[in-house]
Length: 461
Image 1 (cartoon, rainbow, N blue to C red):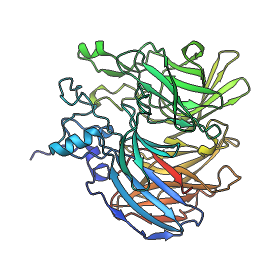
Image 2: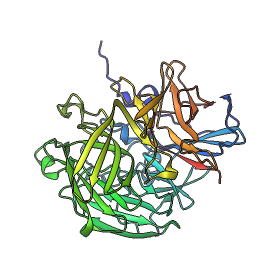
Image 3: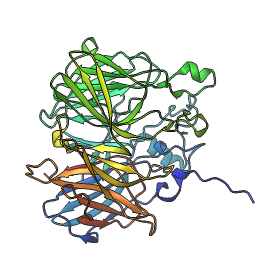
Image 4: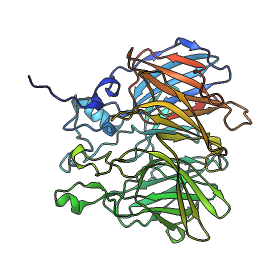
């Protein structure tokens, strides 16, 4: 008897769903807070068709799942992000593009890759954008979750657009970058005004193309991460992986004045590592401080037979770096040895020193499953865990501040959760000031919500 291995990212709660539904007045266990008013939307990969070749979790078409909460009542809807690629495949009735683990389709008449818009979301200047770092953002209509179309800042967008732009809560500016794989400039850096106008884009020199998934901002600086997950056309021609973690290449962190350019960026070196996500950065005296989830190496974008030979590969832990602008030195320290990812803060304080941060505690599993939410108190060095019940796994916990709150942690942590025992999904709302307690509300979703990536909370106002 022959058993055919099922791709784990097309199975169980990683498997896609295909129905787009809209439902009113969802059942709630517990009680939704009366002053929690707005919409939680989460993006994630949801392939429309059976994939060509080997499927990677990052390949699926973007699908948005949204829960709107108002007057203690919750409604749900889910919609595909209708990218140009999604529409072409819908018309063809099949997949037209292969994914990240397959060779680039240079002869594909529709282009070598599709923009899936499947990774993250940002709300800026009154517009929701669905993001994928390989291409342009897509404008999304709220609360409908309908796709308006590609968003190119009136044609001013000349680069790709990171999945993790940063909105300064004080100035209202949005800061983003785009990286290029094979052709310089390998990095382009942009600032958008509070009103949504793309003000400037400047090239930043890198020695080689790298996968730069995230970055950070402080009040006055932008922090880039030139980490040794590199792209090389020469390697590909030799039949080696086009993308590879080069453990002998150092990590470089670039500190740039927000409105500066390549002439005034300063680079700091530290041992090789990889960071998918930053929690926050801030200034303290002569230092720029970065807090992020650090891995000693990563094989997440290579096929399984080319994983780095590292027992700690792809295990992220919370770290802090201190870059001293007067001495040029770097200090790097681990803040916790517990594996966690998807770091978030109260975004009303992004770029400023926060007392608290939140991450997702990883389960002991070869798959990216999260068994709880960790709340870090950086002033005391302590942490607390909101543990999901057995067989229940959650996603990135987004902080929704209480309107008019004075305390930094006065608000809620909101995330989708899946129960493997009953194969059902729900939205959980956890009091951020009492994280070890049961959720204050569990909103029962009428269909399964597959595991996904990043979410956003958009307050009602």
